[in-house]
Length: 191
Image (cartoon, rainbow, N blue to C red; front, side, top):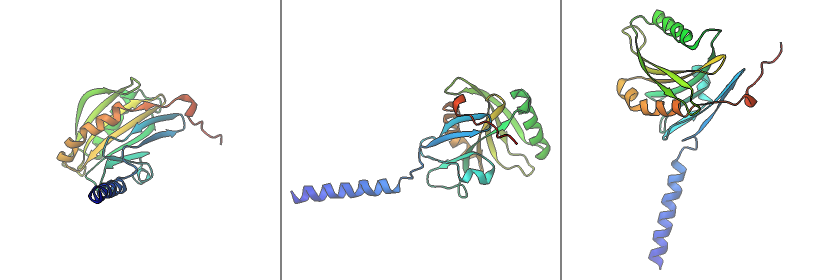
């Protein structure tokens, strides 16, 4: 009987320690919102969803692998939304790529098949390979038309290995994307 209790206590202690080491942000998500838009995204398994640190990189949300943080990771997935400024989504993407090409000559852009979101929106996907100029990141970006804005989900990695290992996580974030309901959209404040 004493041996049984000792085993039971050891098992309980191991479970308690395991629970303490789990990060409470793991497998989380949130609502990304602003004037005229809202969408819901979630972090893939073994990734952290962090909206607080995202502000430091100009994003609304950032995700990184469990066991790392924003300042000590090889790869992140971040989300943002920007106004289309009366452009079509395709026009906005072309302008974005042209601006990037001017800033970082030699960057290689590849088209990938679109991804379907949970609510059947099509995400247009582009890949950006490092240029010999200052741009040294491997990136994959999903552009999603959400009305007057474009939702942008970006996978950014410091090396090709981290990039390739994270494509499945990126695809999860994009395919689980859900445009927000009109009831939660914020109206702009009058001046």
